[in-house]
Image (cartoon, rainbow, N blue to C red):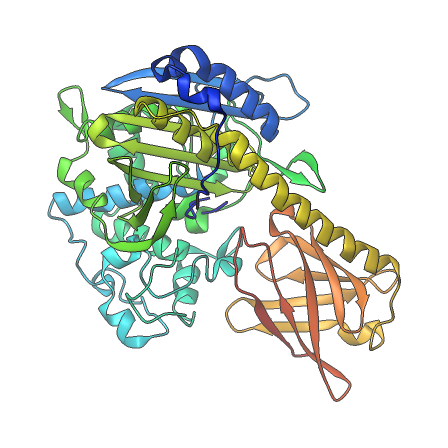
Length: 510
């Protein structure tokens, strides 16, 4: 799931400091990395983090940084849990590829062979979709399409699959890549049909336990119960704040796993060793190879060294070439967390970065810095470059938000009495929401499938309201109401891009 962070980062060529070309890159990992990380975490305002580098079958660096929760002295250690978001997807894809290697299913089997109830809005596409399609994001949906309906909601896994079948795809089937979290949930639900065990139990018994990942949790509901865990953080009006854990178990195969840097090192070590732990074959080599076979073209990516290469997608992994090296990588983001896993199989190099704030690109900058060092390329200071771009974007967003808050303060008149905007509204995919009147012409929305969240609406004048969600991950927005013949007929709802890019049209029914 983002920043649900897994989207392709487009790197812009920039100048580097002239002295950087004279640095002996062989010393960066040993002599400079710790300073680099500490400085970057301060600049990005990351409370806690953990970093691991695996090279040539050994852990060459594993370290925890900072604190579990802002304002408390509890330090992160190598066994402290972080939610890893969409880095869960590689586990799900690997599990299904393992079942294929055991001849218990084929990734080219039709989804309906295992889930007869599976449908897509495009009837023929639903009938033809294979397991592989679910794992490489080629159902025809746009990236994140439907996630407002699914993300952090009270829907069951079965209800998510049913609603997935109601989404009208933007693209023809198998013609364009679009990151689809609900497809990975659907894929994960094939596992209990084949094995008789839920996705979370199968992973524990067949991946976590055999690899020695003793602290790793498959379900988000278990994270708050752990004694050694970080707390999620985000920026709210420029202030770093702790926030509640996301409840993602209805979408667990897409993004619910929590793990530690120690456990993740074992996962990466196995992936770089063809699935072996010592002499023991835990994951079939054929399963690992299957997940790294390119299925889709995501787009092109431009790197700081001037290269432009294609970005591809396998099964649960992004794949690209860089400076003559093939990279297998993914990022993950859920409320208050972003993480990254990067593999360079031919170089036997693996990098894991875990953080407990969802407002940083350090998790992407650091792997590039480490890879450049191993590849004997010049120092580019990715963290500062990304930070500069991020700060520019944030300044622009803050200016837009200030303009809207200033508009609220002007008390511009609404087109209709405020009571006219209250009532029940329905969207065919999402379900219902109810708008009630508060104080000073403000409104409040309660959502059917987000029972712990509400939205506060303040008049901007006319038929527009400035909206702040109680869950900061859903962001701020402007909701325009539709009016015909003096009556409110509907409203357009838009949540933060972190959750979904597409707006929802809700129709007023009472």
